[in-house]
Image: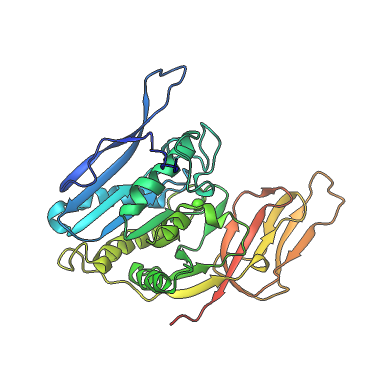
Length: 342
Ligand code: CA
């Protein structure tokens, strides 16, 4: 007997095929000591009008990243069906338990949703959510943007990004969509990062043939106002780019984007020892190979000299660790360098 796809157990309160504006929850039934018959309410807003492309906008995949959650909440209140030709699906707290707790990973199963795609309909809570997004929402979408930030432990130069699709036609569409989003910087993710890149929501979107984009809008577990503004404008310009909303509804065109790439492990700086991390450069600095990046101090043994770490490549400092207290293996920085694109 052939395998039949196992169905999702999640129950949306909205009908994704219906015209109009619908708001509600995707119910994930979760029986606990405190709530025997209860469900986890994952908020969703769908705005649809007739035939046309579908955009799927997600944030809160990591629950401690807030610019995207605010941008999508504002967008959900701004969009009306008469503005739209096609469909916009908005999921501001994609990993709802993590987002409600303000944590990168779910407090229920301790899973990082962006490392488990395509998920599992019979798995733990986070695996079930990933599976619903992958099997029920992404297949509807011509374009998916998953809005991220640095979270509690990192800070980013606000930017957009894409993991380069293996399909050249889809890659060309990714580049066009990144230009339409119009962040001042965007970087193309290579494959050699060791960051679980094939198990992300964005990889799920790419596997299903959607134009897949991401962002890093700031971090530090707060709302970066500059990153929020980039997202607010970028999301509306993506809708114009797709033909979902007309320019009569939005007249702030994108600004030029500087394309960068992250070429591999040499672009990352890791702590070789535990201690107190002293950064020697700032976010957005241009650095050269061999330039000192950081010192790790050990006030536990104040007679011991700090360990100094140098950059192995040249580029722009895109990302910096936030907490000073650091363990061996923590990522302290990553770089990006200019990329020529057609
Ligand atoms: Ca993230």
